[in-house]
Image (cartoon, rainbow, N blue to C red):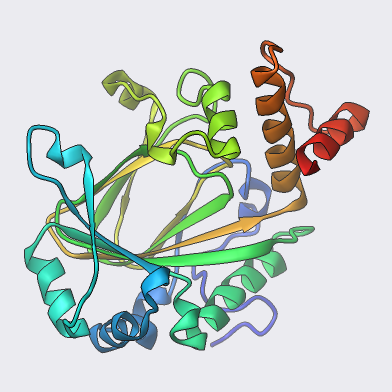
Length: 279
């Protein structure tokens, strides 16, 4: 039965999860895998109706370093079902960004997801919600990277393993994060060494499970031997906005010659940096 106060997307929420949200990783159950929006027919239709500027379709390049290099393509004249079949038998991943442009129900679902979190986490207020639907071949992996906004990953179909690393040195060099925020660095350019895995927390995501990690935690993902359908959601809060502004300003100050600028979270120094970031 639907809980009118908090919703029914999160199916195993406990009161103490509210104290962990944004501070610690949360590995929770959800009900999106049973939604009619993620059947093969629905995804095929979504693919066919997605504007060209709202999706990426990639395969891996050939050659010695091909596994680490993407090659961009497009859907062409293929039907949605033909594309899904190609994903199942190929080496392809598709990012459907802003799916609400093709079907408003995905936008309505996104807002419902955040309404539910805000109802469950006292004081939480989010904005700039974005979602991407990821459809990928068996054994595809996403390299080590960092995201700037708050992130959640929702597994719909297939299985994948996720490594989440601490959001601190040496896993997330501050100078690299600043360059990422300044647009001088790609999210997958973050330095990575195999031994980082010794300090990672590892999660196996199956259909009906989601994962939320603290802001700017580096992570990487590997699909198991099955087609994967996942949803990512991203958001901002006042605290995330402030962190973004301070890091942006620190990047400018570092370029001007200041070494190791402080990362203020309050006070006049933070406000001055937010003003600098705003231009």
